[in-house]
Image 1 (cartoon, rainbow, N blue to C red):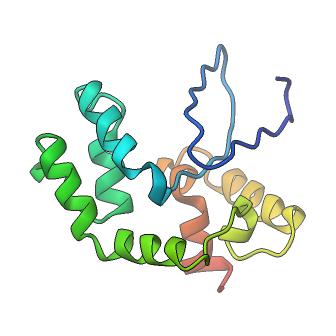
Image 2: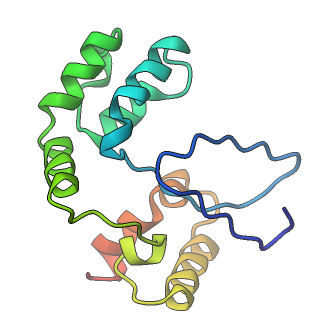
Length: 144
C-alpha cells in the first residue's frame, strides 16, 4: 500500500492497520447486523482490548461503564434502538454498502475530500475534529 491508496473492505472484513510512520487516514466503522454475535465474541476473547466498549458506547449509545462482559455487551446491543433499526433495515433489504463521502451527505468524493482537508487545515491539532470530522460537517458546515 502506498501513499494515496484507498482500501475498500467489504462489510464484516476483520482487519488491522499498522502505520510505521506518521500518517493520515479516513475510515468509518459500522455494526453490520450479521456480525453482531462475532463482534461480541471477539470483544470477550480479547478482554475488551480492542475498544469494544467505546465502539458500543458510540455506535449503540450504550453506557460504556456498564459493559463489564459479553452479557452486558449483548444486552446493550440488543436493546439499542439504533442497532434495532440497523437490524430491521438489513432484514428488509434496505442496507447497502456506502462510501464515506455518501455517509457524510456528499454525492461525490471530491467535494467531501476538499471539505475534509479544509477542516483539517484550519484545525490540525483538534482531535475531536480529526476523529469526528463528518459529524462536524453535518452540524456546522455541510447542512445535509
